[in-house]
Length: 336
Image (cartoon, rainbow, N blue to C red; front, top):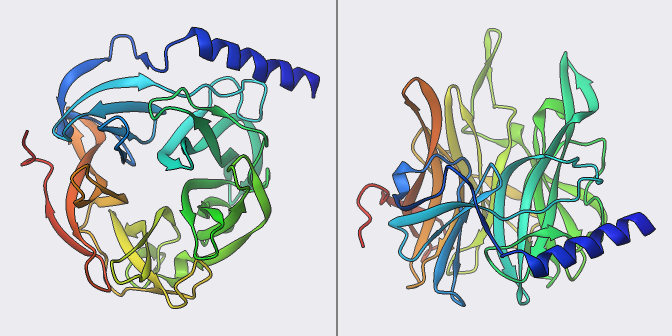
């Protein structure tokens, strides 16, 4: 315990001495068009305090923009505890930025490949979990809080996101990875009021097998895909609670949507019959621009010089009715 307290004190001292963000040597650029950035799981925070957009995702890096058209980065903004379960150099997936009660929170999936927690059907599963870091500024640095873990150590979890439900309590919504349970889930767990840890146990909201639109071949049969990825909770203007999430339709990464019959996270969650995005677009999130317009950020897949990469996209979104209606892709047409 004393060792951990000393480490946290040292990290706080470093925070005073170091700048909030660190440019990534050899990779930092300015005036980058959005569709020239290679990034999985893009998440954009529109921050009115700084009048700036901040984009993060998988890889643990951050980009900044004043207008969504041109970006600068990447910046390195996370400082994890090397003595924690994450180890000295964790992989970082699907990072999200959320502003809450005057602070900024970094929800992300951290993977330590040096720790193996399970082996299922011949697949070794490393230590992987959704976790939350905090900062006083949108561009970091983001650091650990009080609790060393938020979710069970023997359970691979990913793609944690944030929601304050109708009971006024904060929650993390996350996926239990299909590689362990072979029927991925979306679950919730209550968070402490300052988001510094979790309270109680997680609760399953729905399973991948509930999907009427995802598909995969299992031998001679076609069944719902086993993957649950990228949940994001929203309300329409009429107050209806919805959740976008991603799976696969055979070879295409695709996003669907579900709506809560009770208007709360507890559901039951009713899945729409058809996907919400075209094929090859997924892991979306919703945000309002600095001018108040709703947009969805997602990524697509394509080959660039023989390499498989993911590209951020922005879609128009209409939330004025009882359902989310996806508009046109703005990524190649967005202008200053």
